[in-house]
Length: 399
Image (cartoon, rainbow, N blue to C red; front, side, top):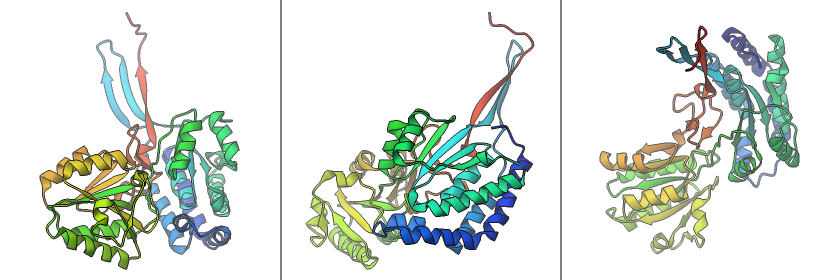
C-alpha cells in the first residue's frame, strides 16, 4: 500500500467519528443479534461481546485519541554521515499488512483498524463467528469512511474464513502478510504459531500472579487483590493466582479474612495443600497444571510460599508473562521482584488491571504483547511501525 500523508489519514478518522455516531443504533442492533445467538455459559466471552452505548462511546474515543496522536511514520531515528560521505538515515516505516485474529470483542475491529491505518498499515481482521454481525457493520463503517475520502476499501478488510480455511491461509497466504497478531486464548495462539509462515507477535494470555510479602500492608494487599480479581474477570490483566508469604503476622487469621472477602465478591477460592489445611472449606487443587491456567472466571487460587525467591520462581515457571505484582512496604524487595520476574508489566503495590494501553498512557492498543521482539506490553500507535535505512551516496563503492 502507498504511503499516505497525515492529513489524508486524519480525514478518514474524522469521517469515522461521525459515521460511528450516526450508525450507533444500527451497531447496537447488529450486536444484539450476536448476543441472542450466543451460548452464555462462557461468561467472560459473553462480556467481551457486548456493545452498548457506552461501548460505542469508547470506540469513538479510541478513534479520537489516535486522530490526535502524532503520525508515527517517517520519524528519523538516527542520521549519520560516514567517513566515505555516505549519509545513512534510519527512519520509522510501516510493517505493510497486519493480520489480527481475535475472539469476540467487536471493539477490536475499531481499535486495531484505527491504529494500523494511522501507522499506514493495511489490516486484515479475522474476528470470531460469535461477533459476525457486529463486525460486519463496523467494517461497513470503515469502508464508508475510506471511500468518502477517495481511498480503497482494501486498507481495512474483514476475512470470512472457517477454521480450516484460516489454517490454509496462514500456511499459504493469498496476499502478502508481514505480521500476524493472535489476540485470544492459548488455543488460538498455539494454532497461529503452528500454522503461520510469517512473523507472529503474541498477545499472550494472562494467568497473572500477585505475591504478598511478609512486609506487606495487609489492608492494601486485600484491596489490590479484590480489584485485580473482580474489576473485570474477562480482562487478560485480571488476577488468577495469589502467593502469600507464610511468615506474615497472624497468617492464618489473614488467610481466613481474605477468603471471606473474596467470597463476599462471589469469587470461588481454590488453594494448594498448605493453604487448604487452614482454609479447608476451599477447593484443594489436585493437579499441578492448574497453576498454568488463565481462569477468566470468578475463581482465584491461593498458595503458600516461604520467601521472595520461591515466589519469583513460581511466577516465572507458571505465569503467562503478562502482569505480576508484589505487595510490600520494602522498596528494595519490590525492586528485586520487579527486576527478576519475567513479565511484560510488573507492579509494586498496585492492581494488574492497569496493564492496558489507555491506563498506561499509550492510548488505544492493538493488543498486549508478551513477546520480547519487537515490543513488549501494550501495542499502541508508536509500536505499529518498523524501521528502514535510507542510504544516500554519490558513487561510493566498497573497497
